[in-house]
Length: 461
View 1 (cartoon, rainbow, N blue to C red):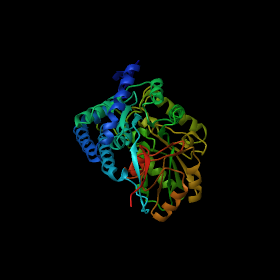
View 2 (view 1 turned 90 degrees about the vertical axis):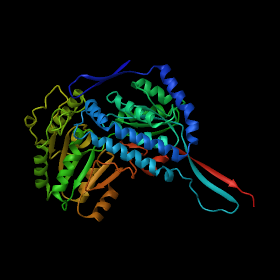
View 3 (view 1 turned 30 degrees about the horizontal axis):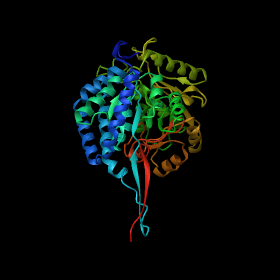
């Protein structure tokens, strides 16, 4: 079977790979299983040195990596280098925090005994990464899994196969022992086959809710651990005391960056009635300044969505929201590159969106956001929680105490004040409800890539 990356830039096949055969899959898993025992004995400092060299190799290839990213998934070239920087930030942070995260836990003295809890690697981690942030998503599991003493097999989206191969090239150049990081190009059926294989000990999956359910269903046959980062329909609240120019700039960027193709990109905007008109006017003015076009043109600020079918799906969701009563305020004719039958899609802002409309209930993986007026903090919290998703949420306010109080009430994995759409590698990256389970990043992320083993030693007196 052949897997093709059709570039959203021009609709041509940009890369093509043959799916791994059953024999190739078996050989890959066997190499990983054979290499891991020696790696788990390597000192953490030795592992960190290799990750450091990996980062150097990745940084050295940064310009080519950024250009390839634009071709594979359509990110404007002016923004693509930010993913290189973010990948390096996370990799270096997770390597640096490993000694603390993996240190033995001492429960305290007990006469006649020595006791501690040690974090041991799981074995072989199977990472299944998505195309929308192909390096940032993969690095969340790949680097900490290796730092914890695991071997890793990466299966990337067919849309971004070269991203997986770039990781492999950098690890090889960094001197990572053979077999510890490998790439498989797979279709859905073979992905499930790998999850069922007894040589896999953990699955880190990023993708759709439907995909997460499929992974969970297969993994449950073996009782192995699964980390799931799934969909989002993230809400934000513009409070009466918000710094409006700052809020407008942040929120528009959070909704439309990467053409809205972000699990943690905001989509539902709740605005206090006292600032609603000023806020929406400012958003409309800023959105109209976007330039939709060829992502390889450095003047472009809004690229295509990943494929024509995705654009068609977004258009259908927008029509459904309008039929439910939402009011569109962006004219498609102001974005000449936006054309039916292509992945080039104009941004849209839907005002007065009803709570049950598609834009306020479903994940729309495109440059679309809905706005609803609210009269109080309590109403904002109720609306924010009225969702099957819970990845991130945010508030714009000058009152830090109020922000914390609201954050304690909102059902979300990450709560922001005066910012959005960002992952701090020092903080746990988690989701609630249909946004997933498990955790990546921070010292907490290491707990999901290791197992605790208790040592209870009676010592001679």
